[in-house]
Structures are given as C-alpha cells and as structure tokens.
Amino acid sequence: MPGREDLQNLSLLGKSENRLPNSPDEATLDRFANLRPGRRYWITLTCPEFSSLCPVTGQPDTANIVIRYIPGDHCVETKSLKFYLASFRNQAAFNEEVVNRILDDLVALMNPQQISVRGDFGSRGGIQLTTEATFPDSYAAES
Image (cartoon, rainbow, N blue to C red; front, top):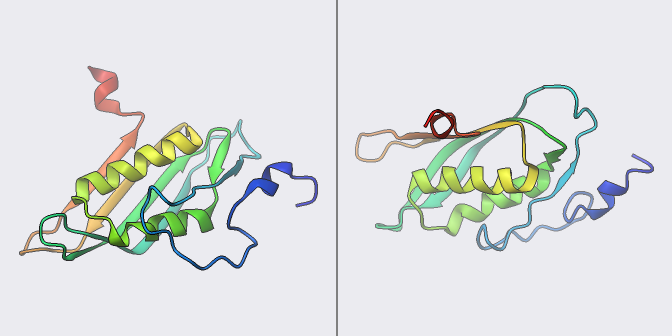
C-alpha cells in the first residue's frame, strides 16, 4: 500500500530470500501496524507441517501448530512467521517448550490483546501430546 511507512521495515516480504534460519534465535519476526486497533477480531494462523527435534533421541517431532490471536497495535507478518517456524526444524526442545517459546516470542513482538499457541504433536510411543499456552495467562491472573 502506498504511504505505509511501517511496511518499509519488513525484512522478508517482497524479497526473494529463500535461506531458512538455523534456529529461532537467528530468525527475524516482522510485524506491521494493525489498521483496526479498536476492533476486537481474531486472526488464526495454521502450520500443519511443523517440525522440531526431540532433545533426548534427536528424532524429529512433527506437529500442527495453530496460532490464534486478537491483535493490539501490531500483527505478525506471515512470511517471517513461516521462516521463524521453519527454524525449529533443527531445534532440540521438548514439545511443551516449543509451544511456550513461540508464545513468548509472539507476545514480545506484538503485545496482542489475547493469543493462544497450540501444538498437536504426532504420536510417539502410542501417546499423542497436545500443548496449548495462552496470554494473558488466565491461571496466573486468578492467583
């Protein structure tokens, strides 16, 4: 859009970058201004081909990651999110830590009104694990 200065700072969108970052620490998440900051609406982003590594066995873990949020002043730019999520492919971490890391990074980037990150991980040893983390943390708010 002409005149959108906030879009000039995006690091990946509109560029032919194709090298995936080696880790989430190396990845760059971009954001842009929410043009409807007074409206409470949901954005849902789904990554059905997410992968990371088991920190004990080194075997790949696969998941369907669903990010659902009500934006505040900013929204996450989806190409940078795609590269960020792909950067977990070599990351050794338990499934619970992966979901909480994604939540923490997105909260730090956007400061959304509300957000949940859910990971439905593939079955391992006959057990399927799902982890969901939310902000604001309703349990902490009740304490």
